[in-house]
Length: 190
Image 1 (cartoon, helix red, strand yellow):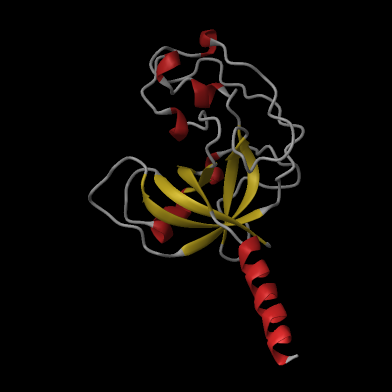
Image 2 (image 1 turned 90 degrees about the vertical axis):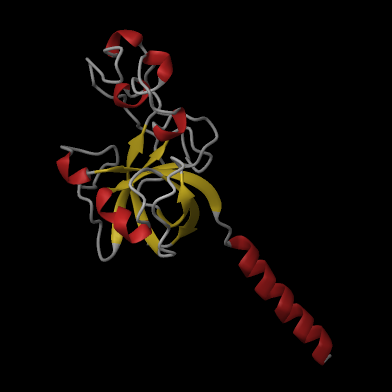
């Protein structure tokens, strides 16, 4: 009887551990304090979203994204051919169901291949308050297809990549790298 209770307890603990799995992703950084609005209704464009919680946007191409992709299409006429946009109006994201969700994020390396710097080993918490739509000119105009020089995974343009655009104020807590990061992402409560 004691052995079977111990086995049931051990299986229960293993099941709980298995539910919390980090997935790989990438992080770029954004100053939300400089924005006038965000895609998630009811949230303000602030780098801080409460006690030690940082603002973040999720790519609508991310496997973690829930809901329909943001509206809009890619149009080269919106790009200046040098990585910037001329008409920078973004698409609507009416079905972003990850608004208000929180994730733990930990640096696993430099996305840009930097050799000077390191991950701190810290885990931070981010709250999704915005979207990083693939059909936004400020994103797609940066990639080579539209005249820019940024890799798709660094512009929310890589299908199947878990991409977060995290508040700039979180960078030093994650790493001493200067560029974008490879990260682990894990769902958590807010």
